[in-house]
Image 1 (cartoon, helix red, strand yellow):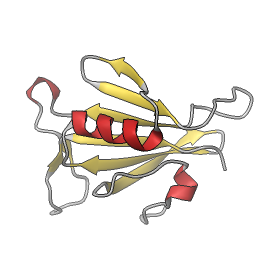
Image 2: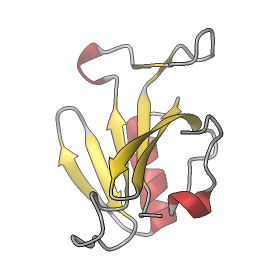
Image 3: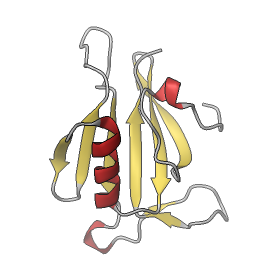
Length: 121
């Protein structure tokens, strides 16, 4: 995977304006997961995506708080995962947050992570 942040057309979803692109992973069937760190609180991220995507999304877990917004209709025959935006609170239970994988970068940890499952390419 490239170290360059993908554009929103590739992602099929908007990226929070101060989101920091961290990495991507192969999700299978031509899909990738794109991971972004944000310093904003989990609840703020859920409210932001509710507004920009114009949907309430689904709470996947109360503990740790995890919320998902599907962005494209899931097709079992051609997709490994539903194209979506998933938000997770990495400060739950007293955690210091998700470690920034970029050595010496600021911030050292992100309280909230955004995972975007892009549609197949």
